[in-house]
Length: 480
Image 1: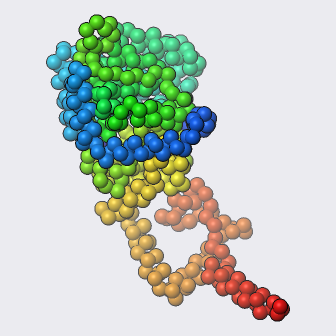
Image 2 (image 1 turned 120 degrees about the horizontal axis):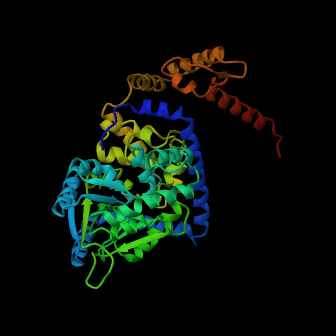
Image 3 (image 1 turned 120 degrees about the vertical axis):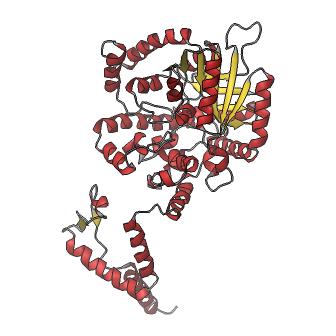
């Protein structure tokens, strides 16, 4: 993952001014939240299922080395090949070598956040391989020359009108903003790609250690074509995406689709165990599973290891008031939203990503909707502290906090400061007690909302007055 050329605050400012982006986000995120609530209501004892899902994730990661070895052994037992990639470059080299060994010219891809994380498409294209995204959202993004802005809805930042114009320009179809017509046009274009491709690359939602099975969930059928039509299938998987057995997988599937798209289960839930066997008509000649570390093993055992519980449903993005205002591209990372604000610094280091943990109001909405109850707000505070320890704090905030610390530890000085603050704030406030403009750097607040003037009486004064009134009341009570 690479830091972008513009700063986080510049990206945020640009996003906040983009009215079309807000229209697109409002349409999608609100709908997903409504669907999620309805889907969870259909799950008997949903809270118990979520608790069970969390326990499965915690247990698996506590014995990750064991389950990875078991998974790799069972994949190879059923005829697959397993590769371990320490980092992004290693994964790209492995996939490129497989493609070159099989004289691959065209690659079709299902949805894969791992390939986005390693920038695999660019690596393959540098070797003169043609890469075609087949997930509709990813296909739209590829045509636009952009990157995904959501974990499960890559083109969430685009309106249907924008997509209609894009398809008219790129694949020469008559303009339409009807989703069904646009989907049909994309499907017709992609059908030939599946038949002519030499290699299919997919992501992996879960790997089952006990059987060596890989599970892919999708709603379009492109994933099934990607993994069966080409002669070589390469599956990309983060090392944390393991479940011990098929019973555990069934638990995860119950909460994944409900949290992601508000479905009881996705339209296509694909369980793939090995390559095509003798007598079978469908499937690739070879199956390669590439397991990516890229910092994940380093995160294990740390205060933010819980972020590896994530099952990539995207529910926290839809619920987050910050994401819903700025979208995914403002984060500058493959993984946006609350989960990305923790995961990106955890994998890539806090120094280049120190702004992301601050992209949160700490309201706790992400923790509330997470199907495995990840405590994202706690980890955001951990990474904010880490950023401070690495000197990643603006000078005015650092000076301000030192002044605040010096003042509040001296009662007389604190009382004097609050007194002057009350007088000063009420002096510049309007008639209704609100300050419309503050000087830099505090003007960041009043650019979008007014600031309340300090109360006429401090809390201490109000407390003393209240206590005095209570004592008078006690003294005046008649004897019984």
